[in-house]
Image 1 (tube, chains in turn orange, red):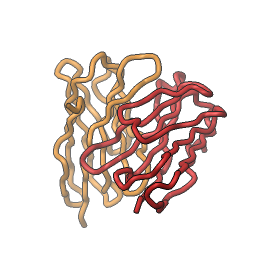
Image 2 (spheres, chains in turn cyan, purple):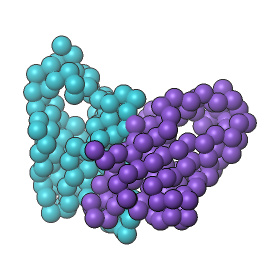
Image 3 (spheres, rainbow over the protein chains, first blue to last red):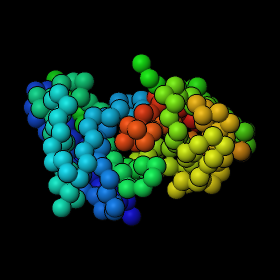
Length: 113
Length: 113
């Protein structure tokens, strides 16, 4: 069973609108949680990283939240742009000596004009 | 600009061929990883290496082997390619001093016919 579940699987939003992506995880022991953006045919690029003591982190129009008690995270995209069309992947790090990661399956976001 | 470079963006190979996928990083990272990414399954770890000449199996090592003769280079080998190995292959590197933040390559889209 995947230890990192993302929802929705995909969504379509109008340019300029906001959206929120969800990530629930069961990974333990938890080290940190990251959100990556992956453009089609490209490797993932890091957006944010949060440890268990952080509950929010922003990167431009992207804001990630983390509730380590309920093991939930969200990624909020503000004033979406066409370039935001991509897959957004939630990644949870297991606490060990080399940082093994557990990946969600991703949410495919399509921003339309 | 630091980077992880994968030698090929697209490859087409025949069933039974021996296939080499090369990955080079210029960040002096100790850890390197090979993942495959398939629709709906997310990224799955094939092999990783935490030092030169060291390698560990990931979640799906069957049908693959790896080589790390130098710190900056990590090669993935498909001993006898099969059609079910058609996938996107992503290389990544990380280091403890960056809290194991992953840097990904751009990926290699391999098609086995």
